Amino acid sequence: MTDLIENIIPEKIPKHIAIIMDGNGRWANEKGQDRLFGHVSGVESVRETVKTGIELGVSYLTLYAFSTENWKRPKEEVDGIMDLLITSIANEIEEFNKNGVRLLTIGEINDLPKQCAKSLNNAIELTKENSKLTLILALNYSSKWEINQALKKIAFAVKKDDIAISEITEELIHQYLFTNSIPDPELLIRTGGEYRISNFLLWQIAYSELYFTEIQWPDFRRENLVLAIIEYQNRERRFGMLSSQIAL
Image (cartoon, rainbow, N blue to C red; front, side):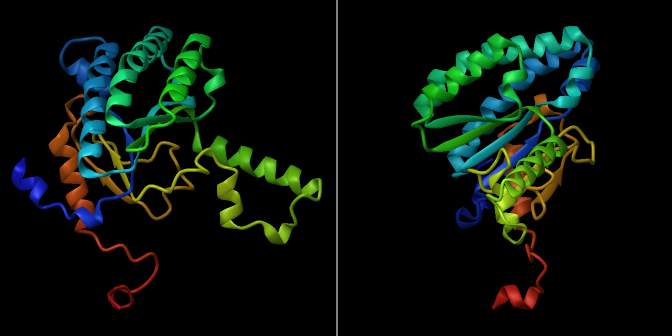
């Protein structure tokens, strides 16, 4: 592991990493356990990823924890995830404050079960002064819904003459997204061997580097995050330009 970390260029650490935490259910099934066992086991991966992010100097870490589409899953699994979320957040507050982790959420939190929303809002309040790493949980989140809501709000502002059509820019749209106070991720990681984005941060990842791994989320550890960052640092990010232009 020491050798791997030595390959990281400190000046090129991505400021914001987003992760689609996939594979909990399949991992559990492979071990003859129910799907919730996989979600419970995945909590340790979250802890280690946050710890490694702090160690490496990552400023923002966004985790896709529960999508709007996940409500379609069996009720017992959804209920178990919500209970796990409540207990996990409550158990981590002390550690968050110790390590300087600020918690934020994106998504329709108020549509979550009442106790779950209360636990999240409490943790957000208790960690708001921390500044080492901002952990953003995407909960009851859908990127298409997010963009749809942003456009409706902009259209309403135009109707009220608060905004002129000529003033609608990418920067203005960004202001109406859940992530308006967060920089776009430079690196998006998906675990579990699937190669799709699953309605996650569609606007924000326009120029993110995408990294897919067969590792299922409960097995994702420090070295896996380090490998993803090394891969990121070995890529040339041109943003539509030529290599020769970037070199100038």
